[in-house]
Amino acid sequence: MGYGLRKRVLVTGGAGFLGSHLCERLLSDGHDVICLDNFFTGTKDNVIHLLDRPHFEILRHDVTFPLYVEVDEIYNLACPASPIHYQHDPVQTTKTSVHGAINMLGLAKRIKAKIFQASTSEVYGDPKVHPQVEGYWGHVNPIGLRSCYDEGKRCAETLFFDYRRQHNLRIKVARIFNTYGPRMHPNDGRVVSNFIVQALRNQPITIYGGGSQTRSFCYVDDLIEAFVRLMDTPDDFTGPVNVGNPNEFTILELATKVIELTGSRSELSYKPLPSDDPTQRQPDISLAKSAMDWEPAVPLATGLQRTIAYFDELLGRTPVG
Ligand code: NAD
Ligand code: UDP
Ligand code: UDP
Image (tube, rainbow, N blue to C red; front, side):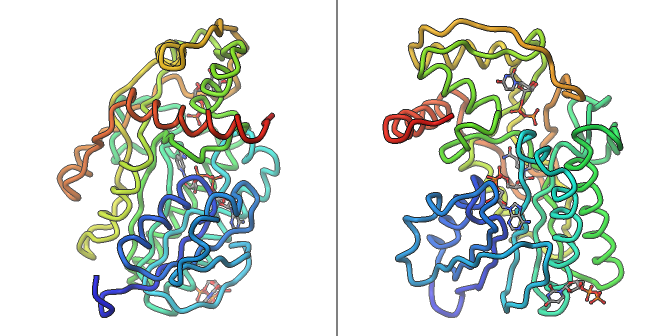
């Protein structure tokens, strides 16, 4: 890409799982990238390989505080994403989503930047409409253990649309469904990382509840492609738009696949189901298909193999847990 097309892009939460892949992608597309992170759940290790790139810089900052930089585009990803992490300090989780959104929107307003919000399928709560379409308003407990995350993200969406209506901001809101891949945290309790780590160690695979609850897992490269495409849609397209893989699996099916692909001797071990755990989740991605010409390309088995290879190396290097 020529110099004239180089954009300055801010990625909040850039040292996290998704953020680090996004930084990598934006750099390879020829942009200047500022990776902002407070390193709560993210780590420098996720972006260490980018540090010698002249168009990459890291900013240690917390999005709940104001920020003054000059960029063309903002991807707002800062927020702990796994239940263990976001429930560790729930008040901070809500602050990160709400104050973080206000600060990043205030920044976007001042510098007239285009701004992307990493929203979530959790805005649908334990959904009563299946698969989930963007027009569904959701079924969310406002006072439960997941509420700091769910309601924080819902409020952030409200703020994005109000800044658009009041200040004419260019906004892009993506509702992200379960995503997996290299650089997931090995011990943040998410199902794909848990199962792979347990299988690689031949430890029991922990199935919460009966294992008949479903999720639809998207490989990280597919998701990042959707982010970039969404940012490039015309200004009148704001979303919210579902991004995720519509292939739905039960948790038991996932466990079986992971055992098979790792050749593990692990057995299944049944544990209580956490409260407010959604029973079904599957995105309807018709809107992403029509507006962004996007759909996932990586099948579960292929994505799992790549993720298993990552964890295999990581576990060989550093003991976790
Ligand atoms: P992650 O925890 O790996 O990344 C989040 C990053 O934000 C971390 O690097 C963390 O240190 C940083 N952060 C947290 N609070 C911050 C603060 N106050 N100030 C600055 N930085 C802060 O999670 P992820 O999976 O990469 O998720 C990225 C975004 O995507 C999150 O907003 C999450 O809600 C959203 N999302 C992810 C998924 C998924 O399946 N991974 C699904 C839905 C939505
Ligand atoms: N803000 C920021 N960077 C900027 C501009 C604003 O962090 O470059 C923050 C600012 O601290 C404010 C928030 O964004 O609290 C919302 O800004 P806005 O202009 O919408 O509201 P106001 O400043 O009137 O409160
Ligand atoms: N889960 C499980 N065993 C684990 C971790 C998670 O059975 O070791 C289940 C969990 O109860 C949920 C699903 O897997 O039904 C997905 O959990 P995760 O925390 O990955 O994501 P989320 O619930 O936010 O979709």
